[in-house]
Image (tube, rainbow, N blue to C red; front, side):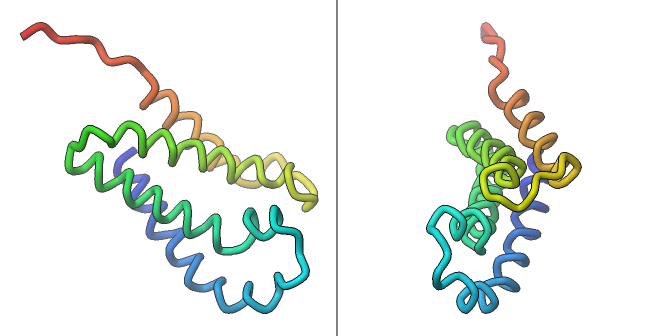
Length: 117
C-alpha cells in the first residue's frame, strides 16, 4: 500500500494543479458541499493524505497506521461522492478507489500479534 499511496499522491497533485484555474471561475454560485467534493479541494486533500501516509510508512513512523486509515477513508469518500452530489451514480465509476479504500482499511485496521522478546 505504501507505493500505491505515493502514486495516488502524485496523481491527485497533478489533478489539483490542472483543475485550480478552471474551478476558480466555475464555482462562484455553487453550494459549499458540492464545491468541497468536486473542486480541487478533495484532490488536494487526497494528494496530501496519500503523501503523508506514504512518507510515514516508508520511514516507519508510529503515526503511519493513522495516516493510512485516513487515506483509505478518503478513497471510500471518493467512491461515495457520486451518490452524495447529483451527478448520476455509475457503479463502475471510481470502483478502484472503493477497492483500494477497503483493502487499506482491512490492512491497517488488522490487529498485529504481540511478539514476545
